[in-house]
Image (cartoon, rainbow, N blue to C red; front, side, top):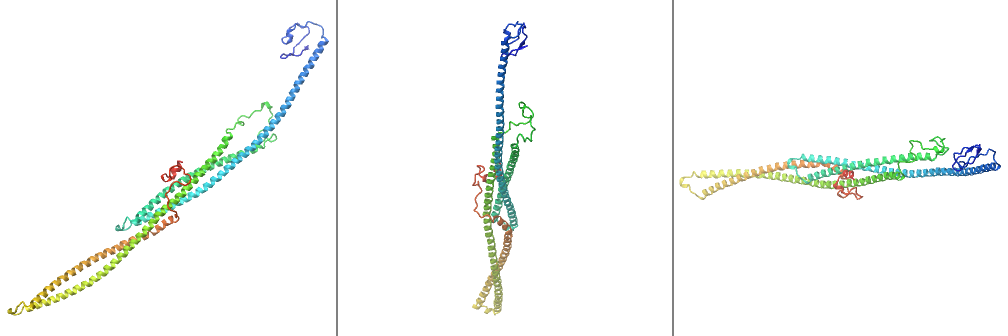
Length: 474
C-alpha cells in the first residue's frame, strides 16, 4: 500500500502498484494506471518523505495557531468572567445602596404619616369634644325652653329671650351638623393615611427582603455557592434551569423607582390633605364658638333686661297695692264721716219736722206763713238735699271702694304671675351656666365660616358644601 498526500478537499487514496483500476477521486483519477511492476524509485521515496515532512510542518503550524488561540481564549474568558463577576458585585452593591436610600425615604415618609396621624387623632378628639359640648348646651337650651313653656298663659311672651333661645338652638344644631361633617371627613382621612402607611410599610418590607437577598448574593463566589451545586457539565451545555426567570425581571429600574416615588408622593398628598382638613376644622370650631358666644351674649343681655322688667313691674305693682290699700283706708274713714254726717242730718231733720208739727197746733188764726215757718221749711228742704247728697256720696264711695278692691285683687294676682315668671327666669340660671361653659373660651370675634386660608381642597366655598361631601369628592 502506498499513501499519497491528499489534495485540498479530497481524502487520501491508496492503491497497489500495477493496479489497472482507475481511482474514484483526486488527482489520480486524471492519470493512467501505473503499470510498472518494479519497486519505487529513490526520488519517489524522497518525494514522499518530503511531502510527509511538509504536511507535518503544516499541521504543527495549525496546532500552534490553535494553541495560541486557546491561550488567548482562556485569558479572555478568565478576564471577562472576573470582570463580569466584579461588575455584578459592584452593581449589586450600588443596588443595595439605592435600595437602602429608597427604604430610608420610605421610613421618613412613614414617620411623617405617623406624625400626621397623631395630629389628626388629636384634632378628631377636639372635634368630638366640641360636638359633646354642643350636645350638652342643646339639652340645656331645650330644658330652658320647656321651663319657660310652663309659664302662665298671660306670661307666655314672644320676648327677645324666647327668640334668643331659638336662635341659640338653631346655631348649636348648625354647629353640630358642621362638626359631624368635619369629623366624618377626618375619619375618612384617617383611613386614607392608615392605608398609605400600610402600603409604605409593605414596600419597606419588600425593600428589606430584597436588600437581604442582594447582600447574600453579593457574597457568593465559586468557593461559596450555597444555592446551587457546582456544575459538572461541559461549558457548551450550560443552560438556565427550567422554571427560573433569571435573565428577565418583570420590572425595569424606572418602574421600580417610580413605584416607590409614587407611594411617597401619595402619602405626602394625604398628609397635606389631612393638614388642611385639620386647619379647616380648627377654624370651624373657632368660628362656631364665636357665633355661639355672640348669640349667648345677646341671650344674657335680653334675659337680664327681662328680669329687670319683671322686677320693675313687681315693684310698681307693689307700690300701687300699697297706695290702694292706703286709699281704701282713707275711703273707710271718709265713709265713716259720711255716716256720722248723715246721722246728724237725720237728727236735725227730725227736729225741724217736730218744730213744724208742733207749730201746726197753733190756733187757726195764728197759722201764718211767717219767716219762722219759711225758715223751718227751708231747713227741711236743705236737710233733705244734704241727706240726698250724703247718700249719693256714700254710694259713690262704696262703688269706688268695690272698684279698688277689684283692682287690688288684680294687682295681687299680677304679683303672683310676675313672681312666677321671675322664678322661671331664675330657675334657668343652671342652663345659662351650662351655655356659659361652652362660650367661655370663644373670645375671638365671630367670622362666618368659609374657605380656609391655606390652599382650598376644591373651588367650592366650604360654607356652601358640607365637609364630608367636600372631602369625598376632592
